[in-house]
Length: 186
Image (cartoon, rainbow, N blue to C red; front, side):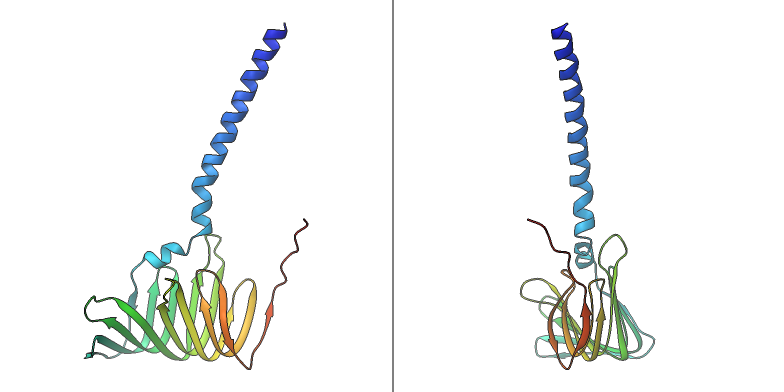
């Protein structure tokens, strides 16, 4: 009788371990996609459109594309709307190095995660580029406003790192609100 009980218990434990293993594998597959949803934005091409004129010129090693009227710039879920834009490309590699958008105001929005959480911002000018650490930087200059789930800030200028939903710098005068983070018990 004792050996039957041990066999039944062993079979039960094997089924539990198999169920737990399956759960761990499922979570390992699903979680990375929800945690790094913005990573997919960076892998997308930058797409642009405008209703007005456009001109292209080369200045040294930089090819400059200028466009006007209802400019729209997208990369994945990142979207920038403005009145005019200047695109700077490295001539030798054709790599896009910076986009500058002017507007009254410029509008920015981007989805932060798969839950649909969105960050939005406005400013007179917006610079969009990748820095030396390979992070997507948005510089909102002139009447800069940014609103994310954790904060709202209005300043003369704001430098924002989109992958981390982080305001790296702010030039005042500023006003805003930061959500309090729950404290963790040791």
